[in-house]
Image (cartoon, rainbow, N blue to C red):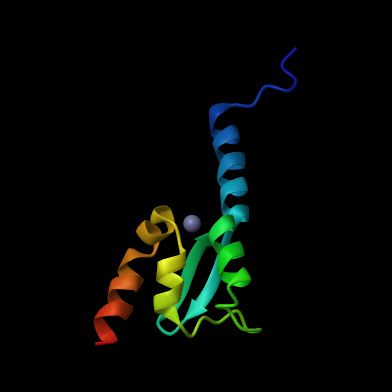
Length: 85
Ligand SMILES: [Zn+2]
């Protein structure tokens, strides 16, 4: 008995690890954008990232990502959108 039962904290830690493994980052002018797996796949497919994982066309990037990623990156996005005017 007692084998295979994960305590709450342990389980949470594993979930967090899975989550962070699913996150990808790309470089932009003002820092790093954190993207989920599908969004990262999309920006790669649309060739928005170069070999150094850098996105030059950040407006295209912002248009390509999901609301969840927008939320995570909101401060950086606001910063970059504000500064590009
Ligand atoms: Zn996303």
